[in-house]
Length: 633
Image (cartoon, rainbow, N blue to C red):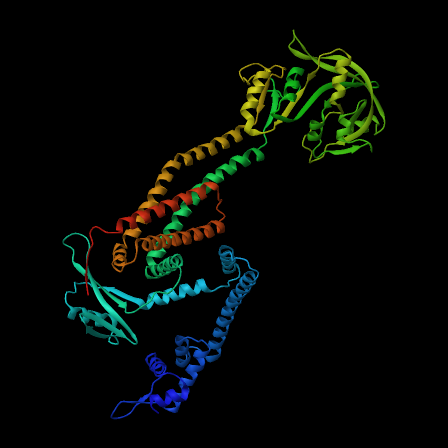
C-alpha cells in the first residue's frame, strides 16, 4: 500500500504518517526502483494502535516506550488513567468556578476578579486544582526547549562555510544546512531554524575570541500568558536548569550553607547551654548558713542573741530557719540526775527526725506540736527507763545556761519548774540523720515563753537556715553584715557568742565563676563572628556567582533581560541556601542542638550577606566591561 491508501484506510493525514515515521514509530519498506514507501498490513495495524493511543492522549514518547518494550501496555494505560484523573479534578475545579461566576452574572452582579483569583489561588495551594499554572510552566519549558539552541565554539568562526561546518558537527548529520537570501538555515524534521553568530572577547586584549552560535526557530510564537507569570515561569525554569547543569557546584553551595549554619548552631548552642546551666544552677544548688562562734569552732551550745535570730527570720533572702534552745532538766524523783531538754521549731524538728521512728498521740503531728503548749516528746529509751508512755505527764525543773563573766565558762542557773503531757516518742534508727537526740523535746515557742515568764533574756543555742535564691547571695551577705554578724577569724580564742555566719557556698561560687568566664569568652568572639558571617557570606557567594561570568555573558548575548538574569540567579542561590538550611535543621534536630533566637538572627544575617554577594556579583557581570559582542548572520 502507498501513503494515499494508508491515509484513506486509517484517517491519519500524510503529514502525521511521515511524522510518526520520523519519530521511529513506523518503519515501512521501500519499493525497488523508485524507493516509494510500501506499507504492509503490520504497518497499518501499527498506525491504528498509534491513533488509538493518541486518542487517549498518550504522548508520542510514551507510545515509543510501549513499542520498544520499555513499558507494558497495562502499565502505560494505568499511568495515563492516573494522569487523566488528575486532569479531570483540575477541570472540575475550573467548572465549579465557572458555574459560580455564571450565577453571579445572571443575578446582575459585577464579577469581582480579585475575589475569584484569590479563590483559584486557594484551590491551587490546598486542593491541587486548576492546573493552568503547572500547564503554563510545562508549555514554557517545552517552548524554550525547541525555540532556540546555542553553543560556544573554542575558536572564532569567520565565514558562512565555517559556520555551516560547525553547526553540522555540533548538531549532528540529521540537521540539513541550507542558505537562502543571505541567511543560513538549519532544518530538523518539520522545524526550521535561522543560524546566527556572535563574536565574544572576554578578559584582556590578549584573550582569544570565541563564537556563540545561535539557532532560532523561524516563525515561533511565545506561549500566551501574563507577563508576570511568564517571568516567574522563566525564572523557575532557569533555576531548575542551572541547578541540574551545575549540579556539583550546587552541591557545594548546599554543603557550604549547611557547614556555616552548623558552625553557627554550635556557637549559639554553646551560649545557650551556658545560659541554661546558669539558670539551673541556683535551682539545683542548696546553700546552708550556720551561726558559729567567733573562731568557727562551735555551732551548738552557743548564746545567740535574739536580735540576731529576729534579723535572720525577717530576711527576704532566707528560708527554712532551724532554731534550737538547749536546757538541762531534772526530774522530781531524780534530783541528782540531769537530762537534756531542747526546744525546737518545726523546721528543725522535721530535719532532726528524718529517718527517726516517731510515734504520735492520735491528735498530734509536727505542725500541731509546734503550735501547742504544755506538751513534750520523749526519747523512747528515756521513757522506758522512767516507765513513761504517751499520755502520761512529766514534771521537771529546768536550768538555762549563762556565761560567767569571771570564769568565762557556761554555768547552769534555775529557770522554772513545769509539768508537761507526753504526746509523742522517738527512737533513733540506723537511718537517722542525727545520731544524738535529747531526752526531752518541747516546742521552741514554749521555751521562749518560759524565758519571758521569768523575765529572762532569751538566747538560742543553735541557728541554721537555707538561702532562698543563690543568685541573691551577695545581697544576703551584705544584709548579714548589716545585722552585726562578723567573719570567722580562726586566730581568735573560743567563745560562746553566736556572732558569725558560715555559708557553704564555695562550690556554687566556683561553678558560677567558671560559667561566667565561659560566657564572657564566647561573648568576646561575638563581634568577630558577626563580621566573619557577613564577610564569608558575601565573599563566597560573590566568588561562586562570578565563576559563571561566561554563562551570564552568553545569556545577555541571547537577549535575556537583566531582570530575568538577576531573578533567576538570586532564586537559584536562595533555593540552594534553603536546602542547606533545611539539612542543617535536620542535623540540629537529630543531635538535639539547642536552638535560640540568636541562631535565627545569625542565619538571617548570613542569608542576607549571601544574597548580597550574589547581587553584587550579578550586578558586576551585567554588563561586563571586558566583553565585546559582534552580531553576524
